[in-house]
Each structure stands twice: as structure tokens, then as C-alpha cells.
Image 1 (cartoon, rainbow, N blue to C red):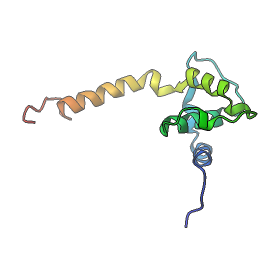
Image 2 (spheres, rainbow, N blue to C red):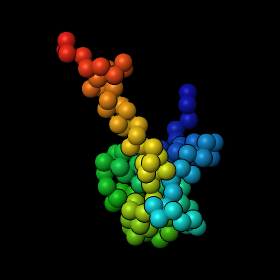
Image 3 (cartoon, helix red, strand yellow):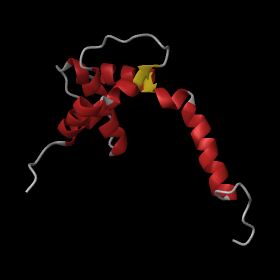
Image 4 (spheres, one colour):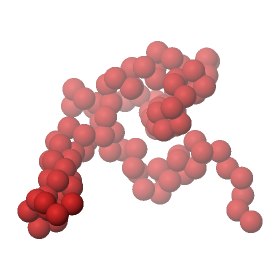
Length: 109
């Protein structure tokens, strides 16, 4: 049987193995030195993935989980891919969906 673990703990554990949260950068392309940034990012990911908003993940007294901190991180940090390559990948997927893998529109459907 697998041990019970909270989702935030699981995401932080996966981050410790892979560093996936390091892909989030400040939109102004400045180096951020926020203490516990991964905890703030995990809280935001969970609030968005579960569509519950910020209220359930806010913890007053915990610097990484205050409403102000989460709001700031939400508006100022994004994955690197979202700024450049994501647009190109989204366009490629859209073309493939509209025209098929060979680039030709399938009029038989």
C-alpha cells in the first residue's frame, strides 16, 4: 500500500527530484530571491488546478502563503515556456488539429 501524502508535499518532493518549479521565472526577467518561492508556486498550482481560488491555500503568519505574496507571485511569475515557445507549440498543435499531421485539411470529416 502506498503511504498517504498531501498533494503539496508530493509536488514539493517531485520538485526536489526534477526542479520543475525552477522553470517559473519573473516576467520582468529579473532574478527573484523570494524565500520559499516553491511553496508559493505549489499553492498557486493547486488553487488553479482544483479551481478553488486562493482562500483555501492562504495561511496567515506563513510568509510563503499570505494573500499578498500569492497574489504577487501569481501576477509576476510564469513558466519560461509561456513567454516564447508555448505560442509556437500552440500554433503547431492548432494546425495539426485543423489540417491533420500531414498539413492538409481533411475534407472527408
